[in-house]
Image (cartoon, rainbow, N blue to C red):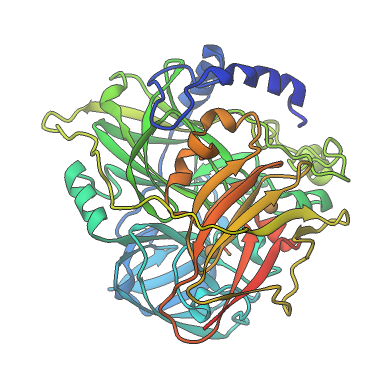
Length: 546
Ligand code: C2O
Ligand code: CU
Ligand code: CU
Protein backbone atom coordinates (compact mmCIF):
# COMPACT_ATOMS: atom_id res chain seq x y z
CA UNK A 1 0.00 0.00 0.00
CA UNK A 2 1.59 3.24 -0.96
CA UNK A 3 -1.03 5.85 -0.10
CA UNK A 4 -1.15 4.98 3.56
CA UNK A 5 0.54 2.26 5.48
CA UNK A 6 -1.07 -1.07 6.02
CA UNK A 7 -0.60 -0.80 9.78
CA UNK A 8 -2.31 2.56 9.90
CA UNK A 9 -5.10 1.18 7.79
CA UNK A 10 -5.70 -1.88 9.93
CA UNK A 11 -5.71 0.39 12.97
CA UNK A 12 -8.62 2.33 11.57
CA UNK A 13 -10.38 -0.92 10.68
CA UNK A 14 -10.34 -2.07 14.30
CA UNK A 15 -13.51 -0.16 15.03
CA UNK A 16 -15.36 -2.40 12.58
CA UNK A 17 -15.41 -5.26 15.06
CA UNK A 18 -18.39 -3.65 16.75
CA UNK A 19 -20.62 -3.88 13.67
CA UNK A 20 -23.60 -6.23 13.70
CA UNK A 21 -22.59 -9.77 12.95
CA UNK A 22 -24.92 -10.91 10.22
CA UNK A 23 -26.60 -9.73 7.06
CA UNK A 24 -30.00 -8.23 7.48
CA UNK A 25 -29.27 -6.75 10.86
CA UNK A 26 -27.42 -3.57 10.00
CA UNK A 27 -28.67 -0.38 11.47
CA UNK A 28 -29.52 2.27 8.92
CA UNK A 29 -27.79 5.59 8.64
CA UNK A 30 -24.79 5.06 10.85
CA UNK A 31 -21.32 6.19 9.87
CA UNK A 32 -20.03 3.34 7.72
CA UNK A 33 -17.89 1.01 9.79
CA UNK A 34 -14.35 2.22 10.33
CA UNK A 35 -14.88 5.67 8.82
CA UNK A 36 -15.08 8.99 10.58
CA UNK A 37 -17.85 11.48 9.82
CA UNK A 38 -15.13 13.79 8.45
CA UNK A 39 -13.94 11.18 5.95
CA UNK A 40 -17.49 10.69 4.77
CA UNK A 41 -18.05 14.43 4.45
CA UNK A 42 -14.82 14.71 2.43
CA UNK A 43 -16.13 12.12 -0.02
CA UNK A 44 -19.39 14.02 -0.33
CA UNK A 45 -17.46 17.24 -0.89
CA UNK A 46 -15.62 15.58 -3.84
CA UNK A 47 -18.99 15.01 -5.47
CA UNK A 48 -20.24 18.58 -5.15
CA UNK A 49 -18.04 19.42 -8.15
CA UNK A 50 -19.65 16.75 -10.36
CA UNK A 51 -21.65 18.17 -13.27
CA UNK A 52 -21.85 15.69 -16.15
CA UNK A 53 -25.29 14.13 -16.58
CA UNK A 54 -24.95 10.36 -16.18
CA UNK A 55 -25.12 8.62 -19.55
CA UNK A 56 -28.28 6.49 -19.54
CA UNK A 57 -29.45 3.78 -21.89
CA UNK A 58 -31.70 5.40 -24.50
CA UNK A 59 -33.40 4.17 -27.63
CA UNK A 60 -30.29 4.26 -29.85
CA UNK A 61 -26.63 5.24 -29.82
CA UNK A 62 -24.22 4.37 -27.04
CA UNK A 63 -25.83 1.88 -24.60
CA UNK A 64 -29.13 2.08 -26.53
CA UNK A 65 -31.56 -0.61 -25.39
CA UNK A 66 -32.07 -3.33 -27.99
CA UNK A 67 -33.99 -6.62 -27.83
CA UNK A 68 -31.77 -9.55 -28.83
CA UNK A 69 -34.35 -10.64 -31.37
CA UNK A 70 -34.18 -7.30 -33.24
CA UNK A 71 -30.79 -7.55 -34.92
CA UNK A 72 -28.72 -10.02 -36.90
CA UNK A 73 -25.17 -8.65 -36.91
CA UNK A 74 -22.68 -7.19 -34.45
CA UNK A 75 -19.68 -5.45 -35.95
CA UNK A 76 -16.56 -5.04 -33.85
CA UNK A 77 -15.25 -1.66 -34.98
CA UNK A 78 -12.99 1.23 -34.20
CA UNK A 79 -15.05 4.30 -33.46
CA UNK A 80 -14.89 7.62 -31.64
CA UNK A 81 -17.12 8.86 -28.87
CA UNK A 82 -17.22 11.90 -26.63
CA UNK A 83 -16.20 10.35 -23.33
CA UNK A 84 -14.75 13.53 -21.82
CA UNK A 85 -16.71 16.72 -22.59
CA UNK A 86 -15.48 18.32 -25.81
CA UNK A 87 -13.00 15.59 -26.72
CA UNK A 88 -13.22 12.72 -29.18
CA UNK A 89 -11.93 9.47 -27.74
CA UNK A 90 -11.01 6.64 -30.10
CA UNK A 91 -12.59 3.44 -28.82
CA UNK A 92 -13.33 -0.13 -29.82
CA UNK A 93 -17.06 -0.79 -29.88
CA UNK A 94 -19.82 -3.23 -30.77
CA UNK A 95 -21.76 -1.56 -33.57
CA UNK A 96 -25.28 -2.71 -34.44
CA UNK A 97 -27.96 -1.44 -36.80
CA UNK A 98 -31.59 -2.15 -36.17
CA UNK A 99 -34.79 -0.58 -37.49
CA UNK A 100 -32.82 2.19 -39.20
CA UNK A 101 -31.11 3.13 -35.92
CA UNK A 102 -27.46 2.83 -35.02
CA UNK A 103 -26.32 1.41 -31.70
CA UNK A 104 -22.90 1.30 -30.05
CA UNK A 105 -22.42 -1.23 -27.26
CA UNK A 106 -26.19 -1.77 -27.08
CA UNK A 107 -27.72 -2.78 -23.75
CA UNK A 108 -29.31 -6.04 -24.87
CA UNK A 109 -32.68 -7.21 -23.64
CA UNK A 110 -33.69 -10.87 -23.64
CA UNK A 111 -36.72 -12.72 -22.36
CA UNK A 112 -36.02 -16.14 -20.94
CA UNK A 113 -36.49 -18.50 -23.89
CA UNK A 114 -35.45 -16.00 -26.57
CA UNK A 115 -33.44 -17.30 -29.48
CA UNK A 116 -30.17 -15.49 -29.96
CA UNK A 117 -29.10 -15.57 -33.62
CA UNK A 118 -26.31 -13.17 -34.30
CA UNK A 119 -23.31 -12.90 -36.57
CA UNK A 120 -20.14 -11.36 -35.17
CA UNK A 121 -18.15 -9.51 -37.83
CA UNK A 122 -14.62 -8.57 -36.87
CA UNK A 123 -13.69 -5.23 -38.46
CA UNK A 124 -10.62 -4.51 -36.34
CA UNK A 125 -7.03 -5.56 -36.88
CA UNK A 126 -6.90 -8.00 -33.95
CA UNK A 127 -8.55 -11.33 -33.26
CA UNK A 128 -11.60 -11.08 -31.04
CA UNK A 129 -14.66 -13.03 -29.94
CA UNK A 130 -17.72 -12.19 -27.83
CA UNK A 131 -18.16 -13.97 -24.53
CA UNK A 132 -21.64 -13.78 -22.93
CA UNK A 133 -20.54 -13.47 -19.33
CA UNK A 134 -22.78 -15.44 -16.96
CA UNK A 135 -25.03 -17.07 -19.55
CA UNK A 136 -25.20 -20.86 -19.47
CA UNK A 137 -24.63 -21.64 -23.12
CA UNK A 138 -22.82 -24.49 -24.84
CA UNK A 139 -19.10 -23.97 -25.26
CA UNK A 140 -19.28 -23.13 -28.97
CA UNK A 141 -21.52 -20.15 -28.21
CA UNK A 142 -19.73 -19.25 -24.98
CA UNK A 143 -16.97 -17.49 -26.88
CA UNK A 144 -14.40 -18.57 -24.33
CA UNK A 145 -11.46 -17.86 -26.62
CA UNK A 146 -10.58 -21.43 -27.53
CA UNK A 147 -11.74 -20.32 -30.98
CA UNK A 148 -11.36 -16.69 -32.00
CA UNK A 149 -12.48 -14.61 -34.97
CA UNK A 150 -9.53 -13.38 -37.05
CA UNK A 151 -9.56 -9.84 -38.53
CA UNK A 152 -12.06 -9.67 -41.40
CA UNK A 153 -13.67 -12.97 -40.39
CA UNK A 154 -17.05 -13.71 -38.85
CA UNK A 155 -18.76 -16.15 -36.52
CA UNK A 156 -22.39 -17.16 -35.96
CA UNK A 157 -23.89 -17.41 -32.53
CA UNK A 158 -27.09 -19.43 -32.10
CA UNK A 159 -28.46 -20.31 -28.69
CA UNK A 160 -31.48 -20.10 -26.44
CA UNK A 161 -31.35 -17.76 -23.45
CA UNK A 162 -32.29 -19.92 -20.49
CA UNK A 163 -30.86 -18.12 -17.50
CA UNK A 164 -32.64 -16.52 -14.56
CA UNK A 165 -33.43 -12.85 -14.89
CA UNK A 166 -30.39 -10.75 -14.14
CA UNK A 167 -27.98 -8.26 -15.63
CA UNK A 168 -25.33 -10.22 -17.48
CA UNK A 169 -22.73 -8.68 -19.75
CA UNK A 170 -20.69 -9.33 -22.85
CA UNK A 171 -17.05 -8.62 -23.62
CA UNK A 172 -14.10 -9.91 -25.68
CA UNK A 173 -12.34 -13.14 -24.84
CA UNK A 174 -9.41 -13.67 -27.22
CA UNK A 175 -6.56 -14.58 -24.90
CA UNK A 176 -3.68 -12.12 -25.32
CA UNK A 177 -6.09 -9.29 -26.23
CA UNK A 178 -8.72 -9.34 -23.48
CA UNK A 179 -7.56 -6.56 -21.11
CA UNK A 180 -6.67 -4.15 -23.91
CA UNK A 181 -9.88 -4.66 -25.90
CA UNK A 182 -12.16 -4.49 -22.86
CA UNK A 183 -10.36 -1.39 -21.59
CA UNK A 184 -10.72 0.34 -24.95
CA UNK A 185 -14.47 -0.01 -24.87
CA UNK A 186 -15.62 -3.52 -25.78
CA UNK A 187 -18.12 -4.28 -23.01
CA UNK A 188 -21.84 -3.88 -22.51
CA UNK A 189 -24.87 -5.27 -20.72
CA UNK A 190 -27.36 -8.04 -21.37
CA UNK A 191 -30.55 -8.06 -19.33
CA UNK A 192 -32.52 -11.28 -19.02
CA UNK A 193 -36.13 -11.01 -17.89
CA UNK A 194 -38.38 -13.66 -16.38
CA UNK A 195 -41.51 -13.76 -14.23
CA UNK A 196 -39.80 -12.75 -10.96
CA UNK A 197 -38.31 -9.78 -12.76
CA UNK A 198 -41.62 -8.68 -14.22
CA UNK A 199 -43.25 -8.96 -10.80
CA UNK A 200 -40.58 -6.83 -9.13
CA UNK A 201 -40.73 -4.14 -11.83
CA UNK A 202 -44.49 -3.97 -11.41
CA UNK A 203 -44.47 -4.00 -7.60
CA UNK A 204 -42.00 -1.14 -7.46
CA UNK A 205 -43.16 0.65 -10.63
CA UNK A 206 -39.67 0.55 -12.14
CA UNK A 207 -38.71 1.81 -15.57
CA UNK A 208 -35.30 1.15 -17.12
CA UNK A 209 -33.36 4.38 -17.51
CA UNK A 210 -35.64 6.30 -15.10
CA UNK A 211 -36.08 4.52 -11.77
CA UNK A 212 -33.93 1.54 -12.72
CA UNK A 213 -30.40 2.63 -13.50
CA UNK A 214 -27.58 0.43 -14.78
CA UNK A 215 -24.21 1.60 -13.48
CA UNK A 216 -21.06 0.35 -15.19
CA UNK A 217 -18.05 1.17 -13.01
CA UNK A 218 -14.69 1.55 -14.72
CA UNK A 219 -11.39 3.30 -14.15
CA UNK A 220 -9.52 4.79 -17.07
CA UNK A 221 -6.48 6.86 -17.93
CA UNK A 222 -6.49 9.55 -20.65
CA UNK A 223 -3.82 11.66 -22.30
CA UNK A 224 -4.26 15.42 -22.91
CA UNK A 225 -6.04 14.75 -26.24
CA UNK A 226 -8.59 12.53 -24.52
CA UNK A 227 -7.16 9.29 -25.85
CA UNK A 228 -7.33 6.24 -23.59
CA UNK A 229 -3.99 5.16 -22.22
CA UNK A 230 -3.22 1.52 -21.61
CA UNK A 231 0.47 0.91 -21.13
CA UNK A 232 0.95 -1.45 -18.21
CA UNK A 233 4.44 -1.76 -16.83
CA UNK A 234 5.72 -5.25 -16.07
CA UNK A 235 4.41 -4.83 -12.53
CA UNK A 236 0.99 -3.74 -13.77
CA UNK A 237 0.82 -6.58 -16.29
CA UNK A 238 1.22 -8.89 -13.34
CA UNK A 239 -0.69 -7.04 -10.63
CA UNK A 240 -3.39 -5.41 -12.72
CA UNK A 241 -3.95 -2.04 -14.41
CA UNK A 242 -5.65 0.58 -12.25
CA UNK A 243 -6.70 3.90 -13.77
CA UNK A 244 -7.02 7.17 -11.88
CA UNK A 245 -10.16 8.49 -13.65
CA UNK A 246 -13.39 7.00 -12.35
CA UNK A 247 -16.14 6.49 -14.89
CA UNK A 248 -19.77 5.48 -14.47
CA UNK A 249 -21.38 4.50 -17.79
CA UNK A 250 -18.37 6.21 -19.42
CA UNK A 251 -19.29 9.45 -17.68
CA UNK A 252 -16.68 11.12 -15.52
CA UNK A 253 -17.94 13.05 -12.46
CA UNK A 254 -21.55 12.11 -13.15
CA UNK A 255 -24.75 13.49 -11.67
CA UNK A 256 -28.05 11.65 -11.65
CA UNK A 257 -31.46 13.05 -10.76
CA UNK A 258 -33.58 10.62 -8.78
CA UNK A 259 -37.01 10.81 -7.20
CA UNK A 260 -37.60 10.22 -3.49
CA UNK A 261 -38.90 6.74 -4.10
CA UNK A 262 -37.41 3.26 -4.44
CA UNK A 263 -34.73 3.36 -7.12
CA UNK A 264 -33.06 0.25 -8.45
CA UNK A 265 -29.36 0.33 -9.36
CA UNK A 266 -27.86 -2.48 -11.39
CA UNK A 267 -24.14 -2.36 -10.97
CA UNK A 268 -21.40 -3.95 -13.04
CA UNK A 269 -17.76 -3.72 -12.16
CA UNK A 270 -16.40 -3.50 -15.70
CA UNK A 271 -12.91 -2.47 -14.58
CA UNK A 272 -9.87 -4.50 -15.56
CA UNK A 273 -8.52 -4.80 -12.02
CA UNK A 274 -10.08 -2.35 -9.56
CA UNK A 275 -12.49 -3.39 -6.84
CA UNK A 276 -14.91 -0.96 -5.16
CA UNK A 277 -16.30 -0.75 -1.63
CA UNK A 278 -19.63 0.88 -2.34
CA UNK A 279 -21.83 2.98 -0.09
CA UNK A 280 -24.47 5.69 -0.48
CA UNK A 281 -23.57 8.70 1.65
CA UNK A 282 -25.53 11.68 2.87
CA UNK A 283 -24.47 14.30 5.41
CA UNK A 284 -21.68 12.30 6.96
CA UNK A 285 -23.59 9.05 7.20
CA UNK A 286 -24.25 5.96 5.12
CA UNK A 287 -27.77 5.29 3.91
CA UNK A 288 -29.01 1.78 4.49
CA UNK A 289 -30.05 0.06 1.26
CA UNK A 290 -31.15 -3.37 0.07
CA UNK A 291 -29.23 -5.99 -1.81
CA UNK A 292 -31.79 -7.57 -4.15
CA UNK A 293 -29.61 -9.70 -6.37
CA UNK A 294 -26.12 -10.76 -7.39
CA UNK A 295 -24.53 -11.98 -10.67
CA UNK A 296 -27.14 -14.61 -11.44
CA UNK A 297 -30.39 -12.95 -10.41
CA UNK A 298 -32.62 -12.12 -7.49
CA UNK A 299 -32.03 -13.28 -3.93
CA UNK A 300 -34.91 -14.96 -2.11
CA UNK A 301 -35.46 -11.74 -0.17
CA UNK A 302 -33.84 -8.32 0.04
CA UNK A 303 -30.99 -7.97 2.54
CA UNK A 304 -30.40 -4.64 4.22
CA UNK A 305 -26.78 -3.49 4.13
CA UNK A 306 -24.87 -0.23 4.31
CA UNK A 307 -21.88 -1.11 2.12
CA UNK A 308 -20.65 -3.83 -0.20
CA UNK A 309 -17.55 -4.77 -2.17
CA UNK A 310 -17.81 -5.21 -5.94
CA UNK A 311 -14.97 -6.93 -7.79
CA UNK A 312 -14.16 -7.07 -11.51
CA UNK A 313 -16.78 -9.03 -13.46
CA UNK A 314 -19.35 -9.02 -10.64
CA UNK A 315 -22.84 -7.46 -10.72
CA UNK A 316 -25.13 -6.31 -7.96
CA UNK A 317 -28.82 -5.50 -7.96
CA UNK A 318 -29.52 -2.86 -5.35
CA UNK A 319 -32.67 -1.09 -4.12
CA UNK A 320 -32.38 2.28 -2.42
CA UNK A 321 -35.41 3.89 -0.83
CA UNK A 322 -34.62 7.58 -1.19
CA UNK A 323 -37.60 8.40 1.04
CA UNK A 324 -35.19 7.42 3.84
CA UNK A 325 -32.81 10.15 2.71
CA UNK A 326 -33.24 13.79 3.51
CA UNK A 327 -34.90 15.75 0.71
CA UNK A 328 -33.09 18.71 -0.77
CA UNK A 329 -29.65 17.22 -0.06
CA UNK A 330 -27.58 15.21 -2.53
CA UNK A 331 -26.60 11.59 -1.97
CA UNK A 332 -23.13 10.44 -3.01
CA UNK A 333 -22.33 7.00 -4.36
CA UNK A 334 -18.76 6.43 -3.25
CA UNK A 335 -16.08 3.82 -2.98
CA UNK A 336 -14.92 3.79 0.64
CA UNK A 337 -11.24 3.28 1.43
CA UNK A 338 -10.05 -0.28 1.85
CA UNK A 339 -6.88 -2.31 1.87
CA UNK A 340 -6.47 -3.69 -1.69
CA UNK A 341 -4.19 -6.40 -0.22
CA UNK A 342 -1.59 -6.32 -2.94
CA UNK A 343 0.85 -8.47 -1.04
CA UNK A 344 1.93 -11.45 -3.10
CA UNK A 345 5.02 -13.18 -1.78
CA UNK A 346 8.28 -13.13 -3.68
CA UNK A 347 7.61 -9.60 -4.88
CA UNK A 348 8.06 -6.45 -2.90
CA UNK A 349 4.68 -4.84 -3.31
CA UNK A 350 5.84 -1.45 -2.11
CA UNK A 351 8.22 -1.38 -5.05
CA UNK A 352 5.77 -3.06 -7.42
CA UNK A 353 3.34 -0.26 -7.75
CA UNK A 354 0.20 -1.25 -9.69
CA UNK A 355 -1.17 2.25 -9.82
CA UNK A 356 -0.08 5.01 -12.13
CA UNK A 357 2.45 6.42 -9.64
CA UNK A 358 5.26 4.62 -11.36
CA UNK A 359 7.50 5.62 -14.19
CA UNK A 360 4.97 4.74 -16.91
CA UNK A 361 3.57 8.24 -17.18
CA UNK A 362 6.64 10.04 -15.89
CA UNK A 363 6.42 13.78 -15.43
CA UNK A 364 3.17 13.99 -17.39
CA UNK A 365 1.39 12.01 -14.69
CA UNK A 366 -1.92 13.56 -13.63
CA UNK A 367 -1.99 15.27 -10.26
CA UNK A 368 -4.81 13.23 -8.72
CA UNK A 369 -3.13 9.83 -8.73
CA UNK A 370 -5.24 6.81 -7.97
CA UNK A 371 -4.54 3.72 -6.02
CA UNK A 372 -6.91 0.81 -5.70
CA UNK A 373 -8.67 1.10 -2.37
CA UNK A 374 -8.49 4.86 -2.10
CA UNK A 375 -11.62 6.79 -1.14
CA UNK A 376 -13.40 8.08 -4.24
CA UNK A 377 -16.73 9.71 -4.93
CA UNK A 378 -18.25 7.97 -7.98
CA UNK A 379 -21.52 9.81 -8.61
CA UNK A 380 -23.73 12.48 -7.08
CA UNK A 381 -27.46 11.83 -6.90
CA UNK A 382 -29.64 14.93 -6.73
CA UNK A 383 -32.97 14.10 -5.16
CA UNK A 384 -36.04 15.61 -6.73
CA UNK A 385 -39.34 16.04 -4.89
CA UNK A 386 -41.12 13.04 -3.42
CA UNK A 387 -43.32 11.43 -6.01
CA UNK A 388 -46.69 12.15 -4.44
CA UNK A 389 -48.39 8.99 -5.62
CA UNK A 390 -45.50 6.66 -4.90
CA UNK A 391 -46.44 4.45 -1.99
CA UNK A 392 -44.63 1.23 -2.85
CA UNK A 393 -42.88 -0.76 -0.10
CA UNK A 394 -39.82 -2.94 -0.17
CA UNK A 395 -41.01 -6.43 -1.13
CA UNK A 396 -40.40 -9.19 1.39
CA UNK A 397 -39.95 -11.88 -1.25
CA UNK A 398 -38.06 -11.54 -4.53
CA UNK A 399 -37.68 -15.04 -5.91
CA UNK A 400 -38.02 -18.68 -5.00
CA UNK A 401 -34.26 -19.17 -4.75
CA UNK A 402 -33.64 -22.03 -2.30
CA UNK A 403 -30.67 -22.40 0.01
CA UNK A 404 -27.81 -24.33 -1.63
CA UNK A 405 -27.40 -28.00 -0.85
CA UNK A 406 -24.09 -29.05 0.58
CA UNK A 407 -22.84 -32.49 -0.35
CA UNK A 408 -20.84 -34.82 1.83
CA UNK A 409 -17.32 -35.74 0.76
CA UNK A 410 -14.05 -34.00 0.23
CA UNK A 411 -14.22 -30.91 -1.94
CA UNK A 412 -12.09 -30.46 -5.02
CA UNK A 413 -9.31 -28.02 -4.20
CA UNK A 414 -8.42 -25.06 -6.37
CA UNK A 415 -5.28 -23.41 -5.09
CA UNK A 416 -4.54 -19.89 -6.23
CA UNK A 417 -0.95 -18.76 -6.26
CA UNK A 418 1.90 -17.62 -8.46
CA UNK A 419 5.12 -19.11 -9.67
CA UNK A 420 7.42 -16.32 -8.49
CA UNK A 421 8.27 -15.61 -12.14
CA UNK A 422 5.45 -13.24 -13.01
CA UNK A 423 2.71 -15.82 -13.62
CA UNK A 424 -0.46 -16.44 -11.64
CA UNK A 425 -1.35 -20.09 -11.14
CA UNK A 426 -4.30 -22.37 -10.44
CA UNK A 427 -3.20 -25.57 -8.71
CA UNK A 428 0.35 -24.67 -9.67
CA UNK A 429 -0.44 -24.49 -13.38
CA UNK A 430 -0.19 -21.55 -15.78
CA UNK A 431 -2.79 -21.29 -18.57
CA UNK A 432 -2.01 -23.57 -21.46
CA UNK A 433 -4.29 -23.35 -24.46
CA UNK A 434 -3.69 -27.00 -25.24
CA UNK A 435 -4.07 -28.50 -21.77
CA UNK A 436 -7.27 -29.56 -20.03
CA UNK A 437 -6.28 -30.16 -16.41
CA UNK A 438 -9.83 -30.91 -15.25
CA UNK A 439 -12.66 -33.04 -16.60
CA UNK A 440 -16.02 -33.32 -14.87
CA UNK A 441 -19.06 -35.39 -15.76
CA UNK A 442 -22.18 -33.80 -17.12
CA UNK A 443 -24.72 -33.65 -14.31
CA UNK A 444 -22.09 -33.97 -11.57
CA UNK A 445 -22.57 -31.92 -8.43
CA UNK A 446 -19.26 -30.81 -7.07
CA UNK A 447 -17.99 -28.87 -4.09
CA UNK A 448 -14.90 -26.80 -4.75
CA UNK A 449 -12.67 -25.27 -2.13
CA UNK A 450 -10.95 -22.25 -3.64
CA UNK A 451 -7.94 -21.37 -1.54
CA UNK A 452 -5.99 -18.18 -1.96
CA UNK A 453 -2.45 -17.95 -0.60
CA UNK A 454 -1.83 -15.75 2.42
CA UNK A 455 0.63 -13.56 0.56
CA UNK A 456 -1.24 -12.99 -2.64
CA UNK A 457 -3.74 -10.60 -4.18
CA UNK A 458 -7.53 -10.83 -4.20
CA UNK A 459 -8.72 -12.94 -7.14
CA UNK A 460 -12.27 -12.59 -8.52
CA UNK A 461 -12.58 -16.15 -9.85
CA UNK A 462 -15.02 -16.66 -12.70
CA UNK A 463 -16.44 -19.93 -14.00
CA UNK A 464 -17.71 -20.19 -17.58
CA UNK A 465 -20.74 -22.32 -18.38
CA UNK A 466 -22.23 -22.67 -14.92
CA UNK A 467 -23.27 -20.26 -12.22
CA UNK A 468 -22.76 -21.54 -8.70
CA UNK A 469 -23.59 -21.04 -5.02
CA UNK A 470 -21.31 -20.06 -2.16
CA UNK A 471 -21.36 -22.35 0.89
CA UNK A 472 -18.77 -20.99 3.26
CA UNK A 473 -15.98 -18.44 3.59
CA UNK A 474 -13.06 -19.24 5.91
CA UNK A 475 -10.05 -17.16 6.90
CA UNK A 476 -11.45 -13.86 5.64
CA UNK A 477 -9.31 -10.78 6.25
CA UNK A 478 -10.18 -8.25 8.97
CA UNK A 479 -11.92 -5.86 6.58
CA UNK A 480 -14.27 -8.59 5.32
CA UNK A 481 -15.24 -10.45 8.47
CA UNK A 482 -17.41 -7.69 9.97
CA UNK A 483 -19.52 -7.67 6.78
CA UNK A 484 -20.17 -11.42 6.94
CA UNK A 485 -22.91 -13.47 8.52
CA UNK A 486 -23.32 -17.18 9.20
CA UNK A 487 -20.49 -19.33 7.78
CA UNK A 488 -18.57 -16.20 6.90
CA UNK A 489 -20.86 -15.48 3.96
CA UNK A 490 -21.23 -11.97 2.60
CA UNK A 491 -24.69 -10.79 1.57
CA UNK A 492 -23.88 -11.18 -2.14
CA UNK A 493 -22.79 -14.78 -1.45
CA UNK A 494 -26.45 -15.57 -0.72
CA UNK A 495 -27.34 -15.33 -4.41
CA UNK A 496 -26.42 -17.18 -7.57
CA UNK A 497 -22.98 -16.05 -8.66
CA UNK A 498 -20.53 -16.58 -11.51
CA UNK A 499 -17.60 -14.51 -10.19
CA UNK A 500 -16.29 -14.94 -6.65
CA UNK A 501 -13.86 -12.64 -4.92
CA UNK A 502 -11.32 -14.71 -2.98
CA UNK A 503 -9.22 -12.53 -0.68
CA UNK A 504 -5.67 -13.40 0.35
CA UNK A 505 -5.73 -16.09 3.04
CA UNK A 506 -9.34 -17.04 2.31
CA UNK A 507 -10.74 -20.47 1.51
CA UNK A 508 -14.18 -20.34 -0.07
CA UNK A 509 -16.37 -23.38 -0.52
CA UNK A 510 -18.75 -23.36 -3.48
CA UNK A 511 -21.35 -25.77 -4.91
CA UNK A 512 -21.52 -26.29 -8.69
CA UNK A 513 -24.13 -28.29 -10.56
CA UNK A 514 -22.73 -29.37 -13.92
CA UNK A 515 -26.13 -30.28 -15.38
CA UNK A 516 -26.81 -28.77 -18.80
CA UNK A 517 -29.14 -29.28 -21.76
CA UNK A 518 -26.53 -29.15 -24.54
CA UNK A 519 -25.39 -32.06 -26.66
CA UNK A 520 -21.86 -33.40 -26.63
CA UNK A 521 -18.73 -32.64 -24.65
CA UNK A 522 -18.25 -29.07 -23.52
CA UNK A 523 -15.07 -27.01 -23.14
CA UNK A 524 -14.98 -24.08 -20.77
CA UNK A 525 -12.53 -22.04 -18.75
CA UNK A 526 -12.17 -21.02 -15.12
CA UNK A 527 -10.17 -17.84 -14.60
CA UNK A 528 -9.48 -14.74 -12.58
CA UNK A 529 -11.51 -11.73 -13.77
CA UNK A 530 -8.72 -9.32 -12.95
CA UNK A 531 -8.06 -9.29 -16.67
CA UNK A 532 -4.28 -8.89 -16.39
CA UNK A 533 -4.14 -11.85 -13.98
CA UNK A 534 -5.90 -14.08 -16.52
CA UNK A 535 -3.45 -12.96 -19.19
CA UNK A 536 -0.60 -13.71 -16.76
CA UNK A 537 -1.68 -17.34 -16.50
CA UNK A 538 -4.58 -17.45 -14.06
CA UNK A 539 -6.93 -19.35 -16.34
CA UNK A 540 -7.59 -23.04 -16.67
CA UNK A 541 -9.49 -25.06 -19.25
CA UNK A 542 -11.96 -27.65 -18.05
CA UNK A 543 -14.15 -30.09 -19.92
CA UNK A 544 -17.62 -31.42 -19.20
CA UNK A 545 -17.95 -34.95 -20.58
CA UNK A 546 -21.37 -35.77 -21.95
CU1 C2O B 1 -16.29 -12.07 -18.08
CU2 C2O B 1 -14.20 -15.32 -19.07
O1 C2O B 1 -15.16 -13.67 -18.58
CU1 CU C 1 -17.70 -15.34 -18.36
CU1 CU D 1 -6.45 -12.55 -9.87
